[in-house]
Length: 339
Image 1: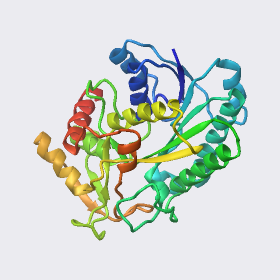
Image 2: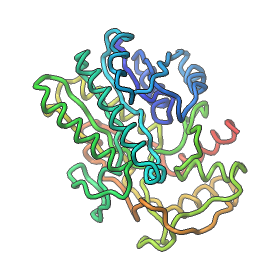
Image 3: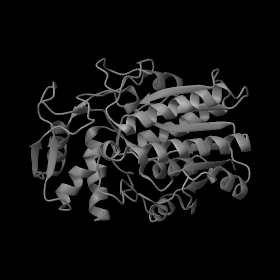
Image 4: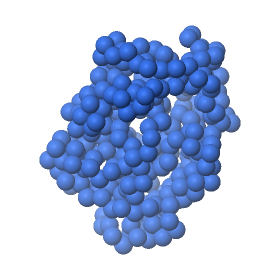
């Protein structure tokens, strides 16, 4: 069995990708410091797959993390690196924390890859790397623009570090950067889903937490954007569709058909949904009226971001299967179970 190391394996996308990896015949080892996640997710993974995944509780930003991993682990077939802090708003308030965590953890993982000569690496990137762009939809060739958040800048820096590392290796090692748009939803079994230890920042869990009563009300940040209803537009992609993309990316790396050291792919449905449209989709699907208010814009947010995913469609054979209605259905079912 080929062993894949998944950093941030107890996290939202990491846990769903672990399920897909196991179901595709891989052995998985997780590394997660559990600062914003819980080991309970591995119980859900076990119920879905029948496999108990072991987790190494290591903070990857520490300077000897690569050495620790090298001493504990044997042969590793591939590394998928999710571990990162990801709140745009928090990054504006604590920029040094984000640069320290996101950059140092990547450097340690790349050092580990170099020490172990690991052939395949997949990086969890984000559409925030494109910054304050006005040209939509976004393709892989869209230039990086200045971004309004330290989180976005950390992802831009990470992608540059990966390029420099792999271009300087002069070897057959290859990497893929997957740029997520807006992950949402939960596994259709409703045994795992988005369950951060810290307060949720993403729209869909905020919606479901409001509906279940965890929050008295929710705020729509900004109603005067130059969009069709004045609220931000995002490209919401089901977390299982995203997880499946990692399997296809790994298969691509294993095929030895990638000619350049690093490739990047946009992962989105390709259709923008506004905040109000997402709220109304939830209300329509559940017959629940949400208690929300219109508020001021949130620092670091862009008016609209959505993907052109043709490259992933053609080169990875990736196709999304789930709609915004599916996302809301699964997210709500998961919320009711976890509450």
